[in-house]
Amino acid sequence: TDVPRFLRLFSLFVMVPRMEGLGSAILEAEANALPVLATPVGGIPEIVRDGVNGFLVPVGDAEALEQALLRLTRSPSLRAQMGKESYRLLIESFTVDKMIENTLAIYHRMKE
Image 1 (cartoon, helix red, strand yellow):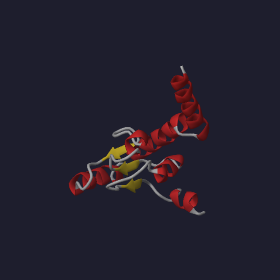
Image 2 (cartoon, one colour):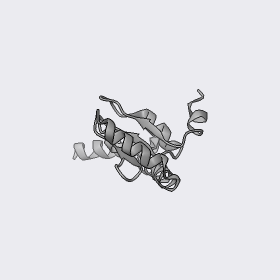
Image 3 (cartoon, helix red, strand yellow):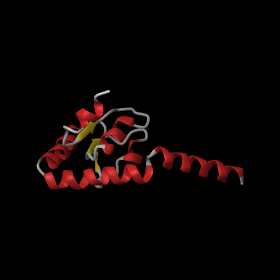
Image 4 (spheres, one colour):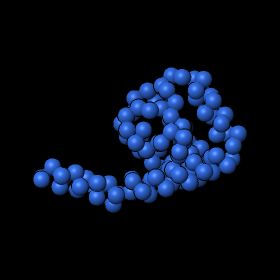
């Protein structure tokens, strides 16, 4: 129950799994306007746009992970910009209302 409170203390969010479904924890980080560093597995590339609201690094590539971490930790302005984009993309595409709207649109297209 304290996750949102803790996320407000972060300056960035890192989630680098080898396998993942959607990555719901990333959506929580985006709701707190955090830039995200993640791997492009499962549904993560749908919610993290490389170079826009964070960075996607190849699975198991420690050097790429290090470089992305250094880039974000060394640039408060980049973190701030990507954090703003995280929140904007979340509101634009991943609110409950937006997901319902998108699901209904798929159903209507299938019905035609």
